[in-house]
Image (cartoon, rainbow, N blue to C red; front, side, top):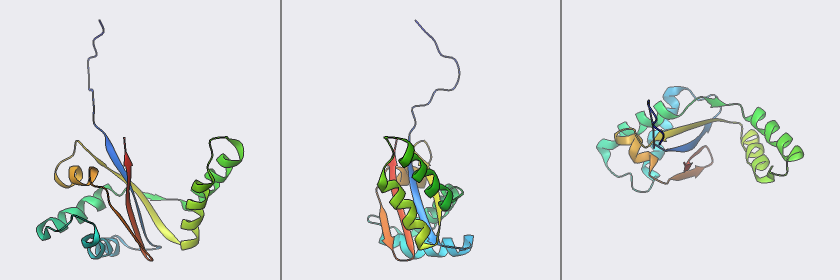
Amino acid sequence: MKFRIGFVSNSSSSSFTLCVPKGSTEEEIRTIIGEKIGKMEGFFLPNFRQDLIDTIMECKGSKADVKYELKKNQEYLETSKWGKQEHVDYWQELVDKNVDVYRGGFPDDGEGCQLFLCYTNFKIEEEDFFMENSGGY
């Protein structure tokens, strides 16, 4: 019999992608999310809105280098049988759109909004804004 001493976790998380106009400030991103969040199916509690915005901002992660990600995916496509053209196309589209991309995550061992967003499937796709809960593990 084996024993493990220390921290053990069964938690999972859900990752998300957030695209906003290039050069948007933190306050502008908050405003954009506030305007768009009502379009997410199931988000109808007005007093919940600010908590959702705050949680998304806290969990949005750092800005991705889209040109680097495109190059990395192009190289992987050329050198590996596991590379996929759709990944290259995805990053090329983001470079072409000239947006800032954030990739974050919501843990299922969080509280309130983090837990809610972890288990909520959502996608908003508009000309100047994109946000999608892109799966968990």
